[in-house]
Amino acid sequence: MNTNKNQSHVLKTIGQNIRQYRKQKGWSQEDLAFECEFHRTYIGAVERGEKNITILNLLRIKEELGVQLTDLYQEEE
Image (cartoon, rainbow, N blue to C red; front, side, top):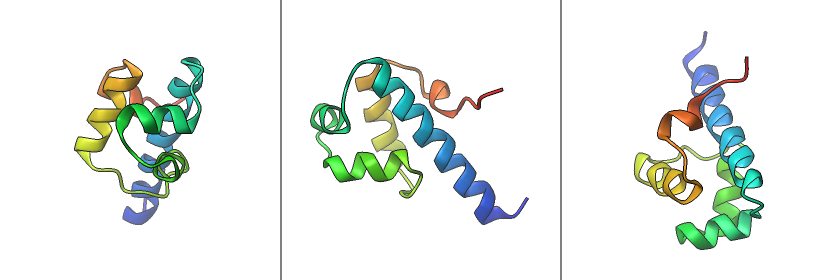
């Protein structure tokens, strides 16, 4: 698999899982952004796999969602 395609796949997987856990909490993108002290548009871009999220930001999001870091990289089977 091409490196760029693989990186894109990873970002999209993480973004989809963030969206799933956010919705399970009944939160909007704006709610999650507020809790993490991020801008709402940043959360949207992360969920769409458009941003190469840093580890520190990923840790912040997983803490607010109350999930493990590994939960955010689980692929649907």
